[in-house]
Length: 298
Image (tube, rainbow, N blue to C red; front, side, top):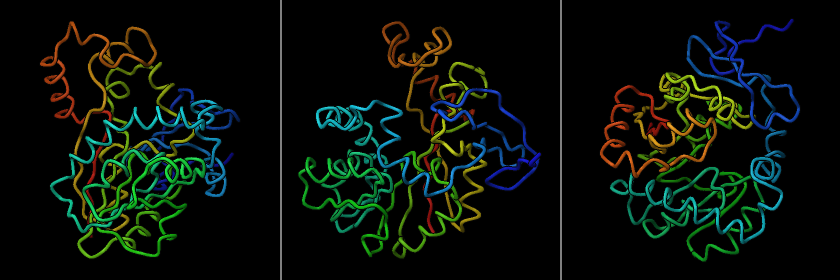
């Protein structure tokens, strides 16, 4: 029998996670936890060419529906994620310059590209999903926004590079970030947002319904601070890692009580803003928020 080792740090000190893998239509994937770098990793790991084909249409049709690419549906997706895109811009706004040329790797239908376009000189986005690319070209209506398959398509370096919930999809994250070095101008900054596998629903509440939803075929790696730091260190970056919470106490209570998603804001009328604020602050102290936000530089 083949010896399974961590696909990130190569440690053999691993443990099996018995939860389901969402969208595992082949029934061949398992999730393991590395006891050394603390990353939860999918095994076996798909190869890159398989991933490129998967993300050019099949991924979103599998996760959402076959009608995902109707422009009316894509407009609703754009509108749904635009408020969060605005929050992401506000998070980095003080570090942006009007002359900046920025890149987003994995730009989906362009909600972040659109949100940041008025703050900088030019915005470039990469997306393997050609139908999403077409939506950006047809519908964004911004002259300083450009889209392609890969960063190398643009033949240039960038002042700022953004990756939102992308690194966990990358087969070789260390190699990938080493290549990103060549895309950064001198003094450039890389911003990365990923899910935090130390999410309180996973680590403390041990909510199996949530874990069966959380672990998915598309996420080859599930990082906590230690695992993400390992990637930055191996790739040769300086870095800072912060904790943010995208969901709320209502969502967590809903998962625990109903064992399904859909509870964001559900109990807000009873809990109030102050209760949620204190709860989120405590999650940050415990490093058990749902999301990690990192800033990296050379």
